[in-house]
Length: 419
Ligand code: AMP
Image (cartoon, rainbow, N blue to C red):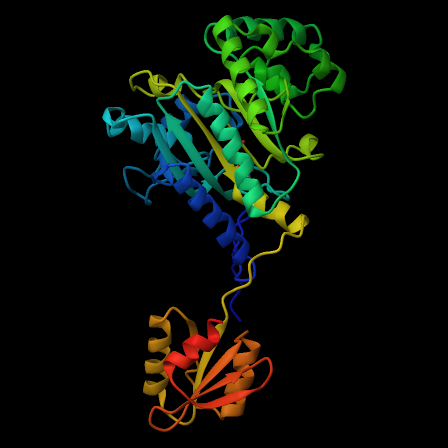
């Protein structure tokens, strides 16, 4: 026997048993995108490395450690091509926004995408090398009302997929006016405790001191005593953050302040948020996260334009749904179309008629005995069997009760199975 080839490490197949949950989260995401007036956008799965290096920052984990590089065909000019599979959606969407001059469209632009992201990380439970996100971005709105709207939208998504106990954690990391002062305060504080920092944090301390705060190896007392972003905000950022909180409070949206929440990427400004199942905050297993990126459009060569967005991890959402034993809607009843002998044309015609009326149909393509066909129909999960006889005579059999009605028409079948 030939040796078996398995899926690459850190990737997963979604088996048919798992797809009802995926259908559910994707349809909730699409329906919410419609109700919140987002327009769909799609960008390539891979982009030039420069886009991520510039947009996300050289010192972000996504660029420094987890970039999934793509090369061109062997011997081609692009063999060592500077491309990478997208680790996150925002940089690609902002690139497209600039490239297609979307700023001339009536704004703010509300864009949405569902698709796979790639990070060359060490795989573990809830952390894959390919995973899916539902992403929303609003470009051209400085907030704070839209910030509140997105946090509320995230909450609504988790509620509508059936999760309970999801909390938003919230922080403000300031802007160009106040972040430098905050960075200096962090460097000063952590430099005094440098020997207690992890190797990663020591290396990052002077390049990106905010990242030291979300190092999971940071001792709790050091974290607790660290300067807080909210204490270093300039007047404009402070007013923005206060207004956001007032809106969330008035809307009754649940959130907790978390001064260690800095998000991993350089492009974030002001509002940063993440969603967790309550009690799971310490485990670095965010269900989703987002934030404001008021400098990103300009950084990538566009006209200055504020932006905010979030990415919800669908894999982790589904893991949480499994843990909370969320019940999924049952599948529409399936109808098997069976027949005797070689009457395949009749079976396909009847199947076609039922499908036209919206019924899900699985015709038996075999010439086996009727008893065998009934058996495999029941095993395949069919609720009903339509047995096609001579001419266009049909019988409808209820596979749960075994009751059979002879001489039925297509209309009667449709009426019976749609009840
Ligand atoms: P991030 O922008 O890194 O916060 O990612 C947004 C969301 O995507 C996270 O909250 C996770 O739910 C999900 N996510 C990020 N990385 C992974 C991964 N390696 N595997 C599965 N889900 C992930």
